[in-house]
Length: 180
Image 1: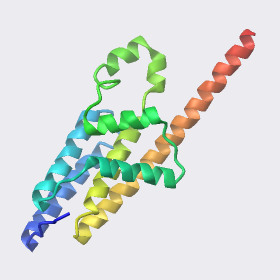
Image 2: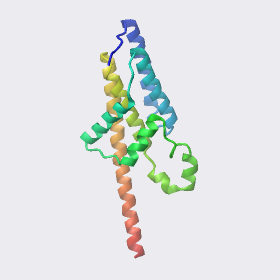
Image 3: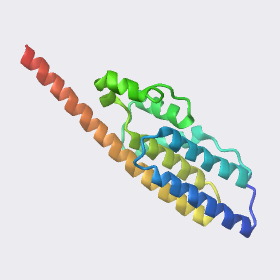
Image 4: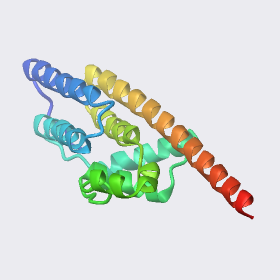
């Protein structure tokens, strides 16, 4: 990867813009608006690509995230991972466009929905991965902050979803045992 090294003035301006975008992403931590999260993600990618004159590959960042989850023994189902990838890449229509209508019609669908924290966490991890590619120490620091925050949020979301799924399964088994 050929990196266009900036002069010190450009570096300061770049770091300022990246820090602002990081703050925007952090403000969306509790947000359920995937579109806003996706827009900030695209702005960060665009800022890095334009300022550093490089082409970033989202698939590489997602592979990195998947490897981190596997290394830390955090399991995400294939369907959930595919949905996360689609939402981060901006391709998802399922559960995103008709969320409010589906939630009203089918409360069970609402329970099976992907945790919003997971989307935010993986987005942060991808941004952190990209920032760590830039040979500016402050970018490494911001990247590490985003990686850590994102992984922590994902771990919590995965654990919560796993526990909720187990609880739901036990309740269903209890219903079947009572019915029998």
